[in-house]
Amino acid sequence: MLYHLSQCLTPYWGPFRLLGSYLLLLAGAAFSAAALTLFFLPKFWGRLPRDHGKAILGKDGMKSAGKPTGAGLFVTLFALPVILLFAPLRPWDLATVAMLYFAMLFGYLDDRAEVPWGQLKKGLLDAAVALAIATFVFLGHAEAGRMEVWLPFTKFIWPVNAWIYIPCAAFLLWFTMNATNCSDGVDGLAGTLTLVTLVMIAVLLYVVVGYSPVARYLLVPPNPLAAPWAVVTMAVAGAFGGYLWFNAEPSKILMGDAGSRFLGILVATAVLVAGNPFLIIALAPVVLVNGGGGLGKLLLLRGAKKIGMDIGEDSVIRRIRFPLHDHCKKNLGWSNAQVLLRFLLLQLVLMPLLLLLFIKVR
Image (cartoon, rainbow, N blue to C red; front, side):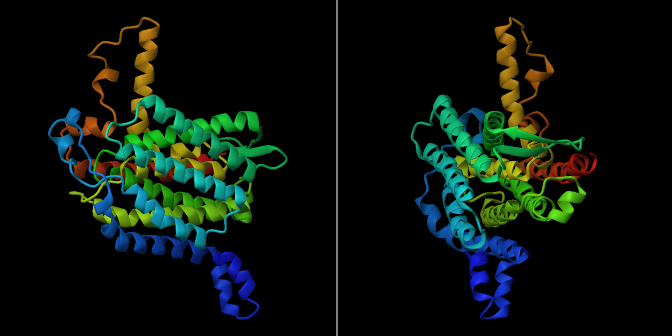
C-alpha cells in the first residue's frame, strides 16, 4: 500500500518518494512487526491453549507442560497488516500469502485439539496447501507458461512447464514445512535458525534476484517481483524476533505448529520465488538435517523393512536420534543452550559458504 501511495503523493510533495524505497520498506516492515509483537503478544497469550508436554521424552519433555502454545497464531496475525501495508504484492502473491495463513491455521487447530490430529490428516492438508502455493507461485512468476529455474554449478537456465514444476515445488514446500516443524523442540531453536534464514533470503531476493544488474552479472534470471517478497520475509522476521524475546530459555510461551509450519512453508515459498529450489540446502542446512533427517530415517527404515533388509539396533542409522537436537541432548549430553548456540554457529558458517558455491561457482 505504501509503495503505491508514494506514486500518488510524490507529485504533491517530493519526500513521499521515500515510501517507494525498498530499503525503507524492508526496515519499516521488520521494525513495525517486531514492535507489534513485543507490545501485543503478552496481552493475548492468556487465550492460548496449554502445552501438554511430551511424556515420551521423559522429565525434559515435560518442562513445556502448562506453557501457552500456538503463539504462532498471534505472531503471524501481527505480521499480516505489516505485510499488507509495506509489501506491494500482486494478486497471485496475495493468494500465496493467504495459503501461508491456511498452513498456520491448520497447525494452530492441531495445537488446540484435545487429541492431536493423525499423520494422514495432517499430511493431506499439508499437501493441499503446498500444491496451492506451488500453483500460485507458478501463475504469478512464470512467463509464457514456463518457469525459469536456474541451477547450481551450471550456467544453464531451465524453462520448466507447470506439469513438472508444480509437483516438485509442492514436495519442496511440504518437506521444508515438516522439517521446520520437527526442529521445534528446544526453546528458540527453530525460530532463531529460521530468523537468520529469512534475513538472508530477504537480501538474496532484493539485492540479487530482484536487482537486474546484479542478477545478470551472476547469470541469474532477474525477477522484479522478488523484491516485494523480501519485504514479506523481513516483516515475518521482525514479528518472530519479537516472539523470541519471550521464547528465550526458560521460555514463557511456545509458537507450536502454528508458527513452525508457517515459517517452514514461507522459507520454501521465498526460495521458489528466487528461482532456484536447491537454494533451500544453502539457506536452511541445519533445519533440513535436524528435522528432515528424521523423515529420511523413517523412509529408509520402512523401505528396508519392505525389501526384507534388517537394519540392526547397533547400526549407525538406529543409534542416531532424530530430530538431531534430541540426539545431541540425550546421547551427547548437550544442554538446551548448547544446542541452540552450536546449531546457530553451524548455520552461520554453512549458509554463506553454500550460498557462495551455489551462486558464484557456475
